[in-house]
Image (cartoon, rainbow, N blue to C red):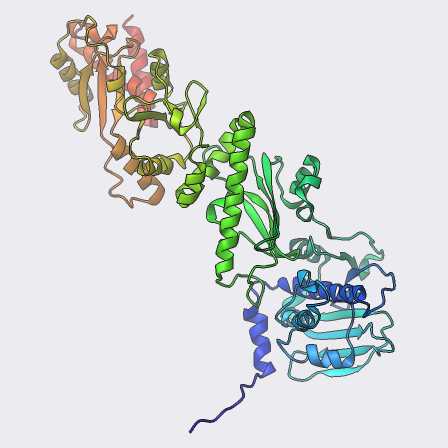
Amino acid sequence: MKREGQIKVDSENLFPIIKKWLYSDKDIFLREIVANGCDAIKKFQSLCTIGEAQDDGTDPRIDIILDKEAKTLTVKDNGLGMTEEEVEKYITQVAFSGAQEFIEKYSDKTDAEGGIIGHFGLGFYSAYMVSDTVEINTLSFVPDAKAVHWSSDGSRTYEISDSDKSDRGTEIIMHFSEDGMEFCDSLKLRSVLKKYCHFMPYNIFFNCVQDNNTVEKPVNITSPLWLKAPKDCTVEEYEDFYREVFPDINLPLFWIHLNVDYPFNLKGILYFPKQTDKLQVMPGEIKLFSNQVYIADNIKEVVPEFLMLLKGVIDCPDLPLNVSRSFLQNDGEVAKISRHITKKVADKLVSVFKNERKEYESYWDDISPFIKFGCIKDDKFYDRMKDIILYKTINNEFKTFGELPKIGDKVYYVSGTDVQAQYIKLFKDNGLDAVILEHNIDTHFVTYLEYKEQDVKFVRIDSEIDEVLKSDPDAKAVEIDNDKIIQLFKDALAMDKLEIKTQTLKSADMPAVITVNEYQRRINDMNRIYGNMFGDNNDKAKETLIVNTSNPTVTKLTQLDHDKQMLLCRHIYDLAALSQRRLSAAELEGLVSRSVQVMELL
């Protein structure tokens, strides 16, 4: 037999849930209470526009007053206020949203929904996260309305009575609990206000009773730059706004102003910051707002991971926030918003490349980690970016992928201009070119490129170099016993894993070079990053010592006595290793010692 019942909510059980689990951070209470005040002002203004309320000319404002001695914090607005009936309706019914009811009632008469912040009817109760008792004094805009006082300690009971409040609006008085005493500090409160209320739409004033002076300067900016049309913003305004929001001594390179009304409401400014570390990708920070109310930083559902290398603000009232306004609900609209932001960023980069190529090149060192990271993370982003990705060459030129200097199907690259300087010199001396890929992200990027563009292979400049620098086969070769030379180096070095071979190179300057197996070296690089995920990191990439038989010192080796042969072979290897990588302390000490011995031969 079926029967129906009614679910009951016990407030004594509900308040502990609100205090501990509804909001991610305790300081959010101030955002919620101030946001309610903003809603009250917005409602009053909306009613004034349709003639259901009389505008008395008072400037909208919210006052926040800290009384350290009384251990109270008061948030006061001059919005529409409440009657006793409305207090009973909106305050004593948990999760009954007065904002939502207002929107439904006046949706055909005003645009109130565009500025109303609250929707769930729980924001007021966040006050109990830091308070053991909360009071309300309120006076409605309704003619002849009586002021009302309400008070509750968070249990199932409350007291309601007449109030002596004489001005329109509502004030919330929070009596700090033991857990909330950290907010009985003016510096702490200013910090929280800056975090959550920096761009709320009405002037917010903060004062401490004990300071004995009233500061009549708002703590917030009511009309942030992202609300203006891009055509009305100056360079100075964009730069000033960046300094206002982000603690960065460097100015941004350039920015993207988002201004979308359809199919969703989205505004914001994304800045491309200057990268201060040329090896590591410096994290950015994107602040998410809803109707000028701060929600959180770097919400990955809205902002793809690679866009978090940027800095900026995004205000999207259409975001499907959860009850605590701290996180997003899983919603198809969020994915659409995310894709649109990515497209706008790509469009801006393409525009700069096409219209300001020199400027784009000057930005490249700073923006390339972001673009490459984005390509690796998002194939569609790569498809948009592939024709504007630049590759800086050792001849200090910028090339696109289609302009890359190739030798056969290979593109040679440099991963460290300092360490591989000798190889760069060899390339330049022989009229060859290579690209510079020395950021940490390039280890991943070259592999990604080979996956996307399978007709090209990237080879580091110290790999397979003997193939591109070997002498012309028709050139007259110096007669030399190659096998004897190889054996001399094997005896001198005693390195079983080192392959040694001879080659007549175009340049006679270097007596030897070291090449490293490209595939094995990449595995080693990935293991260093991911902790041996791809095998045993002790398996060093195969090295080959290419002894240059066009070098005069090498050609004379067989004519020297044994001790000199051993010394010079070891010294030649040291020079080759020094040109290929950073030497260990022991290796460097040995090089210095042998250099002294070599000089003594003179």
